[in-house]
Image (tube, rainbow, N blue to C red; front, top):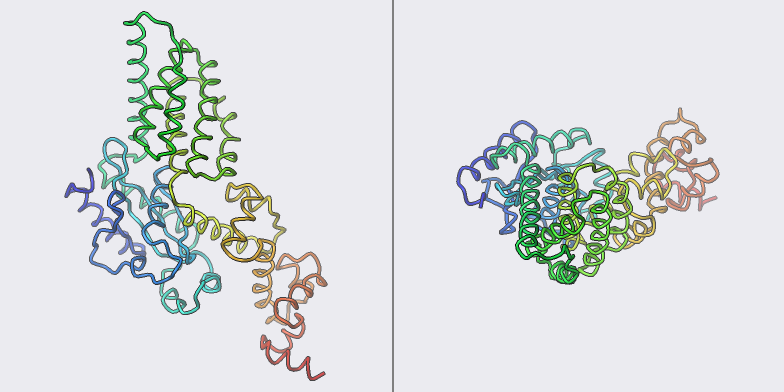
Length: 416
C-alpha cells in the first residue's frame, strides 16, 4: 500500500509543508485506510475540535471520497461551517490510500462564518483562521490535487483508476467469451447474478460487488453480440438494478433518483464500447459510495453550501429551485435537510441573511430605505419593514435613528 511506502509518505508530508508556507493554509495527511491523521509535527485543529456535533475524521473521509469520485479534488464544509479541500493519494491500482487535507479556512466574509457558528465561544479561535476567496480555494484545491498525484507517483489520480477498471472489464469480457466458446453454449445472460449483486451492495462489499459487476458486464456484452445499441439498453437496466440495491443499502432515494435522471442522456453520447465500459465502472463506484455512512457529514456540507449560495445572492431573487439546482438535490429533499439541520426553513434563513446585511446599509444615511430594501433583495419597502421589525423588534427607520442600538430604539418606542 502506498501509505506504508516511505517515499510516498515523505512526499505527502513535504508537500503539506510547501503548501502551508506558500498559501498560509495548514495541510494534513489522512490515512484513509486506517482512518487517522499522520503526525505532521504541527497542531491539527480538527483533531482538537470540541464541538459536540463534529464528526471528526469522518468529515474528512467524506471529503476524500468525494475528491476521489470527482476528478481528484473536492471543497467541502465541516459541521462548524469551516472550509476544507481534499485530494486523494492513490496506489497503482487506483485504490485510495491517503489524502491531503487543506484547512480549516474561512471563505468569504468572516462575519458570516462567525454569525453561523453554533457556539459563540468558538469565535476567538475561528477568527484566527486564514480568510480566502472562493477562487483562491479552487486554485488551492487544484494545487493540492497535483501534489497528491506527485506523492502517489502518477500523473492523474483518476485516470489510473479508470484504466485499471477498464482493463478488468475487458478481461471479464474475454473470459466470458472464452468460456462460452469452450463450452459451446449459447450467450445466456445469468439473471441470478443480479440477485447476488444486490446482496453484495447491501452488505457494503465493494470489492465483491465490483468483481461481480465486471462479470455481469462481460455477459451483457457477449449476450448482446457486442452490439452497442443493445448494450446501452441492457446497461440502463443494470443501472436500475444498482439504484434499487443502493437504496436498500441506505442511500437516499431522492439523491439516487436525481442522478438517475441524467443517465439516459449521458449513455446516448457514447459511441464506443470502451468509453461505455469506463462510464459503467464510474457509476458503480458512485452507487456504492452513496451507501457509505456519511449522511450526517454530507448533510452539513449541503447546508453550508446552501448558506454560501444565499450569502452570495441575497440581493437577487432566490427561489427554492435555484438553490436546489445549485446543490444538485430535489426541492423537497433540500427543504427537509435544511430544516432538520438548522431548525428553520430555507425561506426564513434567506430573510435572516437579508436582515443582517440590511443593518450595514442602514448605518449609511446616504442610502434611502427604499434602496436598502432593493439592495438586500426585498420586493418592496413595506415587506422589508415587516420582515425587519419581526426579526429585530424595531423598524428599519428606528434602527437607523438609533445608529444600530436596538435596545435604545426599543426603549424609545415604549416611552412613546
